Image 1 (spheres, rainbow, N blue to C red):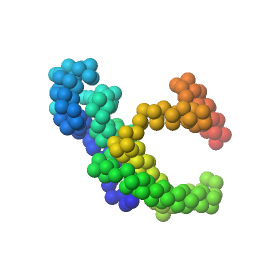
Image 2 (tube, one colour):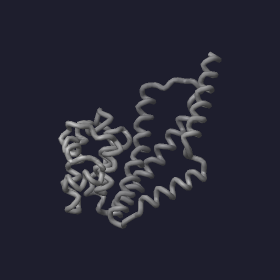
Image 3 (spheres, rainbow, N blue to C red):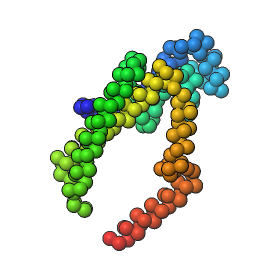
Image 4 (cartoon, one colour):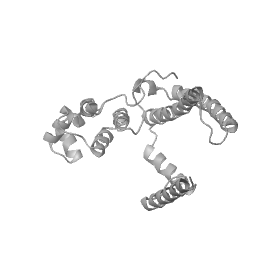
Length: 212
């Protein structure tokens, strides 16, 4: 996939209100399209909701996420996450209507990522310790990493398509994933553990600096 866009974020923060307004006005259930309904569900006043949609009041991340979840509008949710720097831009929802298309696309992207990973592994084996990368190498690393990043986008599309078409229970999916990840000890289980890890990293980095 060629990268011709120069900005990290596709949508500006000023677009949040408009995104939320469109999500409400295009809600599948008629009652969800009213400001009164949304304000009640969010626990805010209709006046504040109107100001958020008009862009004269900021929407905190938590409210913006809750807004999209109430409407089950995951395209809008991914737009919000992208603005806050937490996700890639969402795929065109029309592309998600075929589960088979998304599964085939994921296979293609995964195969491309595997080949890119092999190239990076080869670069790693040939690289001398503390050596610097040439501009050519940096560009190559960027291109190969992009192939790997494509898998993230395509995997999200598969899950979204399964949820849309086959009613995949994503809450159960995420709970099961977290449970297994905790069992495999690949995620940080608590804030306390996070603090412990950061302390260890801090003292290790300080020790390295003192050596030099």
